[in-house]
Image (cartoon, rainbow, N blue to C red; front, side, top):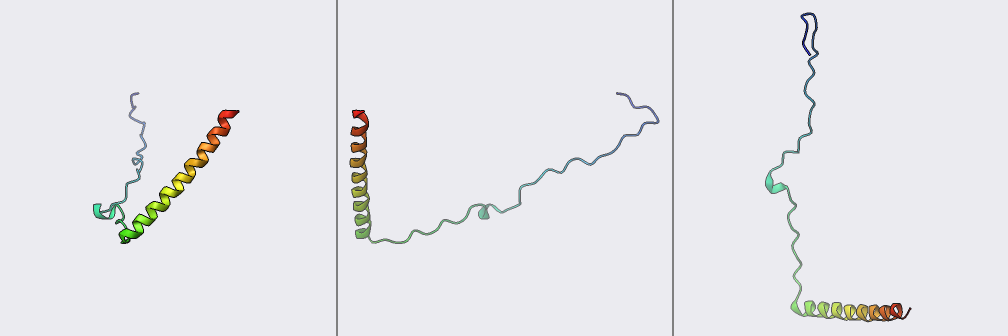
Length: 71
């Protein structure tokens, strides 16, 4: 397309693109929360409870599996 001497072109500003917010690197991620100190006896007790619950869940799943395989 050639321009004639009487033709004017409109000058539009380039579209504005959104910029990411300027943040220092150390503020990018939140600092980790400290883990509360738990005595080792309590940790063993909690782990025992978790294992007991998992055993109960496993038994229930075995019962469900038996019922489903019979049908």
